[in-house]
Length: 325
Ligand code: FDA
Image (cartoon, rainbow, N blue to C red):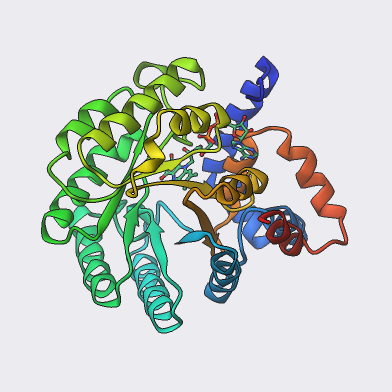
């Protein structure tokens, strides 16, 4: 695994804080030259700003034999009309997926559709989406956000999943509370996605990137499989992936690997070539700033790639899709 230096750890923490700065986000959105330059770097991880961009890349990856998840990016939306607009966009995405014969999973943040304003508001959007998704044969998936929102996200999820099992949930291995959360949702038949966790969290409630975290990750996956859940192993960590393969967990047809678009396409490609089920997680939308910061923060050498992408004449999307083999 890539070894992270102290300087890189500080860089990661700083970039995750920058990602949270709404003044910087507005500056990037409202300053055309800066926006254009950073968009060139975001193209490596985000399919584009519009639904058709996500659908277009999704079709290409499906044709190569991958499964696909799609997210309309956005979170922490505090204006009711913007939450409603986001829910409508997700409805349109579900519609286009089913009409266009694109069998993709739709992922989203509850705080994009109202959680930051009112739990009931988010719940009613979720129920509308779930109803439409079930009719359309599309699977819905809730992402996990900062630990300050975990209780609210789990309570909205549990309530909605009791009416509609077609809603999956993401759990973060880096939160110390997660084994208890997993035990609490065991009755729900939903698919569970295990991630390490992308947010900067207080030290007293989280485990930093380490072998302890990798062990915790594997324990959670094992326990989720043992409890009979469908599981998405969402990581690019080769050590974890090797362990999963060695332990034979992939022989269970309800277990899959899931990786972010643009991250380690070589790894996705070799797993797929070996016959393992691999799902690629695509994003689209205007609010790519925080997403871009997280992808660079997770792996500081991506900063070099970002600078190269700013001056490259190559079409990044063509290069990325090609890397998926
Ligand atoms: P880790 O960060 O330890 O990286 C292991 C190795 O993978 C690195 O050494 C490097 O080789 C490679 N790698 C990782 N990130 C890279 C990058 N950006 N660029 C290049 N190489 C990279 N988080 C969250 O908090 N809530 C959520 O809902 C989700 N949802 C989600 C869905 C899916 C499908 C995935 C794959 C991930 C998420 N995440 C997430 C993000 C997740 O929490 C985590 O931040 C990233 O997956 C990176 O962690 P790894 O498990 O890859 O390990």
